[in-house]
Length: 274
Image 1 (cartoon, rainbow, N blue to C red):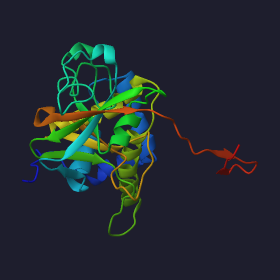
Image 2 (cartoon, one colour):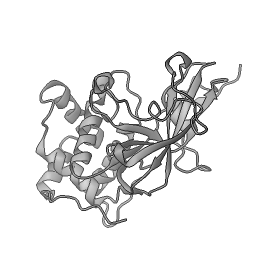
Image 3 (cartoon, rainbow, N blue to C red):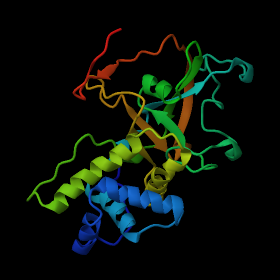
């Protein structure tokens, strides 16, 4: 696969890095940017933030390839009454059309990466993660489609579990490392209000407009599994025309299992048993 050619963009200067440091931590800086987008300028923000995002995309080795033929998974809560399409040997849940992206932009709500009425393909690396993302109720049925990638894709990743850098450990280098982790947490965080998606949407639109086919981020609904790498990974595909549903299966939700820890008098969370 050929390397993604990013457009030219102004490089960050030492003055820019000192500007970022003036906000304190990367989390504090991102909170300031998010508040500005929510309450002041919905479509424009500090130009230094765009330079910072470009630095992240180009200089931090966060572009990941998804090869042709790779299978992703997309889940939908199954409603038999709304599934009037004739079944085929490949589609046992929803049919091909209903297993893919919505056809009507008017029914597309705000998502973590998309504003309302903007269609992207949301998919996952595993069946379990795809199902967890839609939070199905007990005793419900879920249709999970296999989505095949038809052309190679290049995604911008927000999946970092750790960030390293070489050279002298200066305040700027420490801020850079923490910014990489802050972006991962931004996409991994659970939000209760769709307005809190605005910063994620803004960053996603920037990634799309500099040439990426989508983004990758860790699910907030499942935990990391070191035995099954990437199991907790979600994908949002902007270029969904490069993908196609090839089959679907029905799954029944038997139970929801929780591992609980309770806070003790010292403030430490410890194993809980009833």
